[in-house]
Length: 147
Image 1 (cartoon, helix red, strand yellow):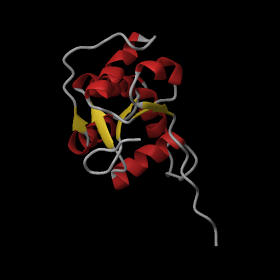
Image 2 (image 1 turned 90 degrees about the vertical axis):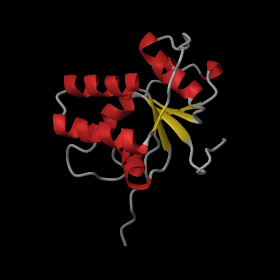
Image 3 (image 1 turned 90 degrees about the horizontal axis):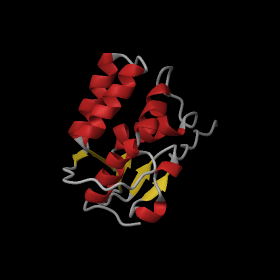
């Protein structure tokens, strides 16, 4: 799989992964319990990939997290972190790629931003045959061994 200049994969993260990831932080974070939380934690801690985003994607993250009653301070901190550490992509046109039109902005960001990966919990909404990026679910982190 190709990597960016920094040697890191370029990825688009679907809203369902963000929702599952943030819910994994409600209690104390435990590695290996929620794969989406593991993905977000690794990204925040190690910048394990380049998080590609557009203003439309950030607006969707905010709207869905607000609707789910996530604390506004947490939403703001998360969005600011993605803006600060991620890479903004300017999409000039969107093709109809996804069977769910709400996912077309993610597909367009992926194609325009030359993503290597689209992280999602709904792979049926991201037809692999029509995308250059690999469509993947977040992988669980290995829990630390007890010694």
